[in-house]
Image (cartoon, rainbow, N blue to C red):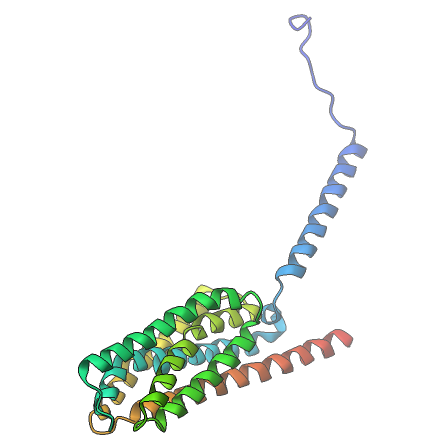
Length: 246
């Protein structure tokens, strides 16, 4: 029969094809709406372009200030700080204390992975910053008290560990972290990292408390950027609500 007459499969009627196309379109639209509801973020909205740029710049300064003024400066110069304060730590004691602050840092990184499942990035930033502030103040008044200095040093290492990851997670809740935004983060951090450690190291030998002062200044400036970001978020949400109502 095959050689007698070639088999031609039946073609769907126009009505069937149209129905299938309509169903497929409705399914795609439904999937797109569902996916958009899950992934849409505040500063992806086209009307918030200027606010988005402000968030990127403030977020980059916030990230860079935390990275340079807390982690880089502290771990680079804490050993020298311990040797120059009135307590005059011996080299082995200073090295041991520095290693313990790094141990607290590592433990905080480990625990932070579990804490992040229960605590929002915004709250983690607030808690970590407050802990770092308290520990900096303890170290300021502990130049003649080893116990307070141990508490402040180890606590500071514990408090600052989760800040970079929390900042990036907080930023990701507002907008996608694109290549362009990441480049701004790296640029600002690199600029701060180019001259701030040099300035601190230049004064550290003659004035050890410059390590504490620089840490407090960096934490204060970074937290001010964090507050400014939250203010922009609140105003942007109100702006969108007003535009939607109108």
